[in-house]
Structures are given as C-alpha cells and as structure tokens.
Amino acid sequence: MRVLVLLSGGVDSSTCLAMAVDRYGKDNVVALSASYGQKHTKELESARKIADYYQVELIEINLGKIFSFSNCSLLSHSDKEIPQGSYDEQLKNIDGEKLSTYVPFRNGLFLSTAASIALSKNCQVIYYGAHSDDSVGDAYPDCSPEFNEAMNRAIYLGSGKELKIEAPFVNMHKSDIVKKGLELNLPYELTWSCYEGGEYPCGKCGTCIDREKAFEINNSIDPLVKLRKGDK
Image (tube, rainbow, N blue to C red; front, side, top):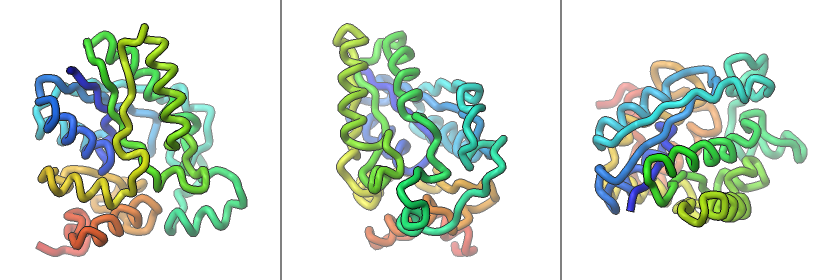
C-alpha cells in the first residue's frame, strides 16, 4: 500500500504523516504540500522539516492563482486582519457567515490535486487531517464528515476505483490528534499552526488557542509555547 499525505506542516497533517509512516513505512509514503497565497511561509517551511525528519518524498505545488479572487484573511493580497480569539468566540460574532479564515473550497481543491498526483505516484490512499473541531458550526464546511464522504466517493469513482481518501481524525477532537502524535513521538516543535508568521506563535489567533488547549488536555505543553515564553 502506498499513501499520499496532504502535509501543511501543522499539527493535524503532521500527525497524519507520522501515522502513515508508522503504518506503511517511509518508502511507501509521499507528502504533498501546497502554497495557496498565504501571508507567510512558516507552515511550508515546517512541512519541509517534517518530511525531512521522516525521510519521505515531498512534492510542493503552487495553487495561489486559484485563490487570488478570494479576500480570505489568510491570503497575502487580502485587506482583512486575521481575527483573534477562540473559534467559539468568532462564530458567535459572525451570525451564520463563514469565518474570514475560510479559504474557499481549499480542501476540495487540495484533494482533487492530490488525487491526480497520487495516481501518478502509484498510491492507493490519500490521508488528510480534517477533524471535527473545524467543522463545528459549519466554520470550515470542507472539513465535515459529509464532505469527506462525498469527496471520497467522487475520487474513488473518478480514479476507476483505484484510489480512496482516509480522514482518520474526521470524528475526533484536536486533543485526540495530539494524543496520537505524542504516542508516536512526533516532534511537534518542528510544526507550525499560527496564522501569523512571527518568530513565535502569536498565542491569540483561533488556531493557536485550539492547539495550546489540545496539549493542555493531554497534560502536556506545546513545545512552541515553551519557546514563546522563553522556557527551556
């Protein structure tokens, strides 16, 4: 079995990669990292570090042009500020609208691109790190179980029934993902989740807050939080 893993360099995708290597061996794993016009390259740099750590092939693609029409706050051309506060707080203030950090159909595009590359690389499975926390309140609709099922069927049929999707965390919380990564001794200090591109995570954006909480639930401390606070 050969597996292609969508690797952003964050907690979820890096844990997916660690699981794939643990299950199938590094020689049967290919990582795919995508630039989509984001405001910083920290995640992409982390993806390279994680791929290098696990000694897997990394393919990098640029899909920025496709998202150039969006004003999502994560994109370099956007005039929107990246919001601070937890996702729960943000969802209460947008009255049913999508979060400003939602990149239009990003997972759909990533998975479609991954399918083409996976078939060319003789892979039978695509791993990606969508999880239940991201789909709460329809914040990121392309992370939901329903979306995953629909894309899995489309890719399975469109590939001549040769390729399928696995989203191992789609019904799990971020704390469950961190638990799995800790069990696999994943070097989380090499990952990056923050929406800002500073030297250290900002600790104020939704993804920073969720990440820090996930480690706390596991009676652990995010290694990047230690660095931000100057701890050894």
